[in-house]
Image (cartoon, rainbow, N blue to C red; front, side):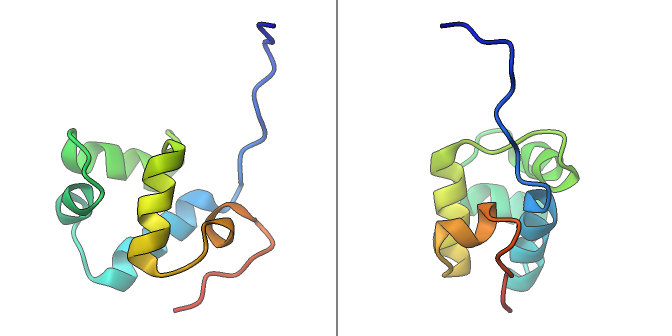
Length: 82
């Protein structure tokens, strides 16, 4: 059961999350509040740098804020429209 393999991660996710926040005209702190995150801008910053990946519910909140389907955020072949 306990596999040491990591699941595949989208390569463009961090850039898309940054684009969503900037497209909404929000600071990292404002975005964290909109996403209902407790650790404020530090968590958003780590998502945008790609050092940490948001959980599924946080990704869903990003998608809803951006008004895009969730798969647009996680599919490297899908383009995020403005």
